Amino acid sequence: QITLKESGPTLVKPTETLTLTCSFSGFSLATLNMGVGWVRQPPGKALEWLGIIYWDDDQRYSPFLNRGLTITKGASENQAVLTMTNLDPLDTATYYCAHTTYSGYDVFFDYWGQGTLVTVSS
Amino acid sequence: QAALTQPRSVSGSPGQSVTISCTGTGRDVGGYNYVSWYQQHPGTAPKLLIYDVSKWASGVPDRFAGSKSGITASLTISGLQPEDEAEYYCASYGGTYSLVFGGGTKLTVL
Figure 1: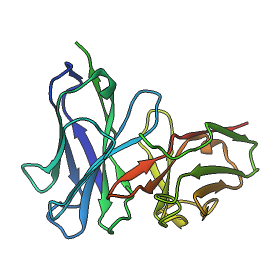
Figure 2 (figure 1 turned 90 degrees about the vertical axis):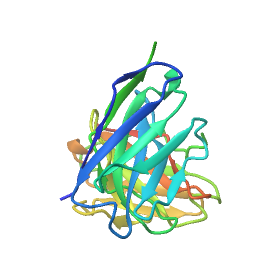
Figure 3 (figure 1 turned 180 degrees about the vertical axis):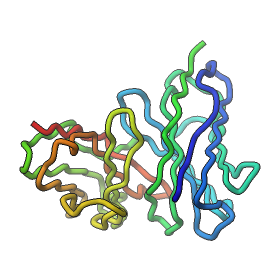
């Protein structure tokens, strides 16, 4: 059974850096074809894809995000880390991590974390 | 952001069928059979319903059916049930190794 959970700060000041950790079980980022993606959702708004990291360290990012974004593996093979720099109040959102299996261009998320609300405010 | 276009809301009565459209371009929906659909109830995480245009995710009833014609993908929900009331999002490969979501559609079961 695959489960994921996001953790990190709930309040961040503008211009600061956000670091979120996705801890998961039921799969490993050391295993062939496994991947973890990040999706965010501003309050009352639509989902927005941020990026993905795959088992082989292949990283893909949204071309529409005008923020410094990095997704890496965590300290263990059961963690992924999202780092976003120079935050703006518009980055206030619920951030989700989700499981995916590598299939070339085909990307879909079959298991999701519960999400964590991050507020950017001074 | 160049989101896929979905109607803001649709509605139907229990037992009826509704269809939610998702319109993109030839560079995303029209160019690849990599459309997925998600259901999201208030305050919860999205749930995968359909992937690769018309394949059912595990445990999803066949009342939910996906299709595509040209640059428009569709999700049809038949035999509407009260618990189907939720927000629905489409997503597609968007080129340059990216994924793009639709703006979401609120389904109301009357």
